[in-house]
Every structure is written in structure tokens, then in C-alpha cells.
Image (tube, rainbow, N blue to C red; front, side):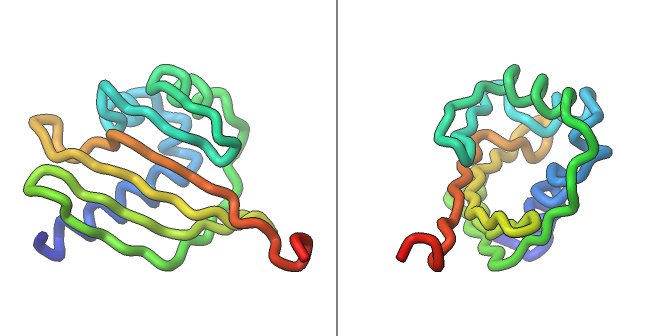
Length: 122
């Protein structure tokens, strides 16, 4: 994978963490693949329609800090990205699968998992 492709996926992933994008129906329709699904931090399975409706109904999205980015090309048209996100005290790990197609890069699958507080689990 060329460096530009990896940077494009990270840029798009970060864009989805911003309020302006999350409130823009046309942009969300473009970014989410028609067959998009997500397993959320709660473990719930979400469809494309449910995710877009949920994002559009959100209040202002708090700033998210991200780290530990890793981008891998699984095939010429498929890219996987993993990262860790932090919102206040909540930390979660994420994996996304992006597909290159006629519409450009589109998010096909996303999974998020809460990182348990080690201090509370002892």
C-alpha cells in the first residue's frame, strides 16, 4: 500500500470522529458502504441505516483523542485500520475495514471494544 492510501484512510477515520461530519447526511451516505455494519462498544450490531440515523441525531460530539494507529492493506481494494480512542476516561479499541471502489474509499465494517479499567477489575 502506498503511503497516501494509508494516510487517506486515517484521515477519513478521524473525520468520522468529528461533529461536522457526523451531522452531514450527504457525507455519511458517501463514506459508509451500502452494506456497512458495525459492532458497537456495547456489543450491539448496527446497520448502515441505524448508524446514519444515530449519528444525525447526536448532540455535539466530544473531542476524541486517538493513538496507536496501524494501517494494513488486506488486498488491492481492502484496507484495515486499527487504533485506540479516548473520550475523557473512556478508552476503546477500534478496527475498521475500508473498501476502494467507484465511489472512492468507503467504510464497510467497524468494531469497537471498551478497554476495561485495570484498576477496577482487580
